[in-house]
Length: 613
Image (cartoon, rainbow, N blue to C red):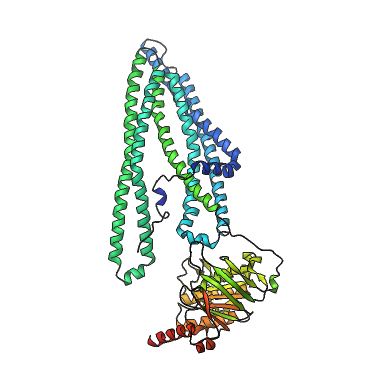
């Protein structure tokens, strides 16, 4: 099976691939204007305290140099028969230095705390916006995007934006201030020595650029193959029973080994090149350090500068290249941050479902009369018309079965009825009201749905049944469970209705899950029911229980039953037979069999298959 690499999962954030935004300038402007501008005061505080912290830290080596000069002069004085070292003056210098470093640390803590607060507030707001947005997007959006892509935006992109924003803003201020401040301090000590130090910068920059360019492609490959490896492990683990049943272990191991080998080679090269950068930068820095030491020694011998100033300059020289590397790292972080922000903004700017309600509809008067009038529909990403000129009239309380081969348009009818999609032509009427006259929320309150693929969340059985009616009482929950023929089963469980269903719902059977979903629908007391292949994957004995529960559910309600097993819909009031988006036949079971048409052919073919089985 071909597996599409995922961009999320364990280790994805450590791949360190610099991903560039398509519109860097526009996204940055939007991030600053629409989000960061709300935190102007806090960002000003960050800016001021970052500068203050850097200035106090930069002044330190110069003051420490004064202490060194005092010690040197004191030793010379002692040798010459003078008073020797003035420890009181040195003590005063060191106390001043300590105070400066304490102030610098305090400023750094303030700006770090404030910037973290801004980043987390921004993250909180973005996550809130994303959750609100995801519930307003049309179903057509999720036809274009995979679950992994959406999850990656909500998890990885938000985390990348938060972490990089927190680090990059303070680091870039600190790095720029450090470079400027150190340059000023170095010039104040010696211009020629400063020029030697500055000459090292372009050499360092060229080497860093060459290594970064070379390692970039390997980091990209590393992320790609990390996605392959993670995806394959997830896929094989999820289907490990099938893998074992078909003796697929050897094939899975071969595929994993191949992807793992590629990951190993790309990761080794990328990590090696990344690791080489530091020692090379150190070597170049040490060359500059030696040149400065030689020239400084000459100047000290000539009496041009003091010994303390040489020590201060050497410290500044060693610190001078650090902000350069930090700025290179920050530029990568900013690129990744803006790329993540761009994907988040693209998601937030997706067109939402348009509400067309006109209001003034009394929902209590909805009985369940439905009419399809010349309905036509095709999906946005398809040229093929799924529903062609579909018309049907259903009276309240009727059981309507929709049958036909796969791809005939059965489930699409239901999606149109609940406005997961809007019709291209024609209209759907409920009790005299076009469904577009309802809000989607109000419309869907009229429906209850039981699907083939049951969905239960990690929580108690009671909470799962109450999902559609959170304010339901315990008595109402029990009554719904009894009507769904699941109360007795629940009472046999540990903690009864308070038993926790695990995230994958593997601690109860498929039939029990289906009965719980039926109880959930019974509790909401909808006017219209949709049963989509609700018993197709259930054993015969459980099917009888579910069928009995569904009979209780359908009493007095308009019901749409989509079924492949035609034996389950013999008692339907009306059967709509669909093929290629059209209703080719309609009538009761007996009427359709007597016509000996498409329905009779479908029914007899299933009957023959069952007999043969």
